[in-house]
Length: 358
Image 1: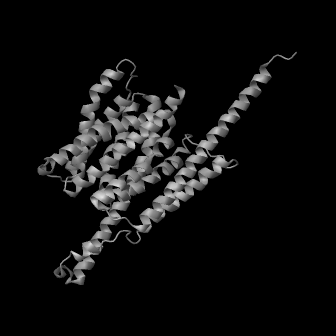
Image 2: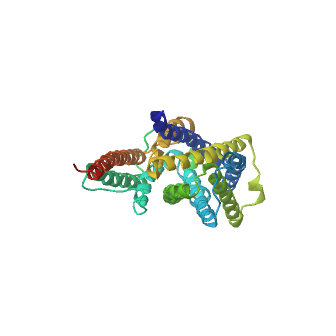
Image 3: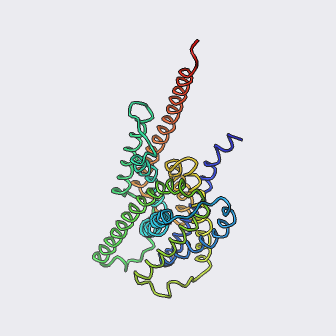
């Protein structure tokens, strides 16, 4: 039974990654069809709130602590950095780059979460032991991979000559038009990368904040319901303030309806509750460490079905990030074992000192 409990966080995070992979693929499809980012986020978080509200009320009504103003403030900021603004940055990044690139960039989340956890005392580094050295090495390897991923695109890895041959000669008359089009693509790619950087930073800090919320208000269903409610309001206010017209709020086809419902019920309800539970059980770095699995699954679907192009920089940078990540995780597990052994030795020593001397 104990071994089963130890494996539960792993199984939960794998299920969450599979679900989030499907969310990313569906998102790419509806964004290409022109659905407004903030409208989608508002609908998605509203569906999540409606779905979770009765579950949280009936399941946690007996053991739910008092909801104070301080906890509400925590949940309000949690909605900003974990739901509304962060989702907007990621959606913008997915639209202007690709789902595979966005997932690869999210691989930096565990390392950034680890760095942010240090000043809060949620993680420690002992440079005298192998585990501490591995943590530092893994962090630098991840940062190097992320810089390569961001600054170097590289040549495409798949032959796209059949796409070029399909372009009529009339489209190649003006080199000025080609240059303008290339500049627009580069500009969009840059905006997408910046959006992903901001989303990654916000998402990393959400894991830290969630560990604090879990201690003060340990009700995953209720806290997620309140967070998604705040997030829906924030996204709606932002959508109206940026000038979205009423026609953009009309859901046009079945694919958009399916995407909104799936993203709200599974992506923003079940996944957020599951991640909050894993943060409570294993900490923020463990929960964030499963991000690379989303990239692998997304690439398996994104490239052959959606025909996304894969570039050398994305592959090499992602490999460096993943290698650095698992060096970091190895160091974390090594240091946990060493800390456990040290604690056990201290307890034995204290027991010996407390024994009456004959």
